[in-house]
Image (cartoon, rainbow, N blue to C red; front, side):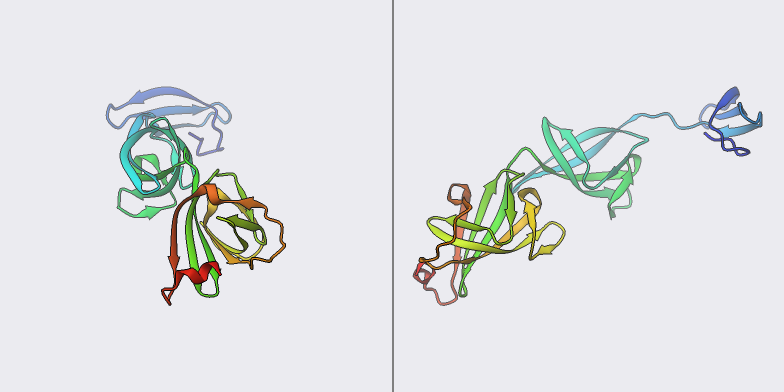
Amino acid sequence: MTCPSCNSDDYEILKTKGKKNKELLVKCNDCEHTYWTPAPEEVHAVKVRVIISEFEKSWKTSVELFSDEYLEVGTLLYIDDKDVEVTSIENSEEKRVFECPVIDIKTIWAKSLDTQARIGLTIDNHGIVLSHKIEVERDFIFAIGDVGEVYGKKFRIYAFKTLERNMRKGYAYAKVIKRIYGRLLPNNDKSKVKYDLSEYVVKTTIKDKEKNKDNYFN
């Protein structure tokens, strides 16, 4: 509470009245102005519904937060023995918002941080596309221009799609990358391989408009 006369927050409570809507008679210790003001609401725990995603799986749970807090997208929470990051918030009006008072939150969406980062890896060979899903440590760093290898075939990274933007230069951590784009290098290319991602592949798909998958490896 601040004094309406001098904005000081140094005060003394002289009297209270009311039960449900309590008011306080307050005296400012700086300017001695006396005034009635609504009593601040007592802070209490609020149980909020949470939906946590972990790759293709998701589950519903809840978390207790304090009524005087704000929550925003990107906040880290510890729920069900897992570190999670808030990815979306739905308020009491069923609207998605970036931040919201806890007392107005209907649902929190979050993603588990206790898993590795899952990234799409698209490697192009003149129109024949090899698409992988890889899982690496969240702090693994990829850079535009890096030469990687998958199952003995080398590729050079030329772009990223991250959570916020597309990138054609620079580097990014795996935890913010959604997809990596690369071009297959010829078998006689002498570029030094920075990392072999073969052991991190969890799924592979080949897309060839001519239905000739063998062309990819030639």
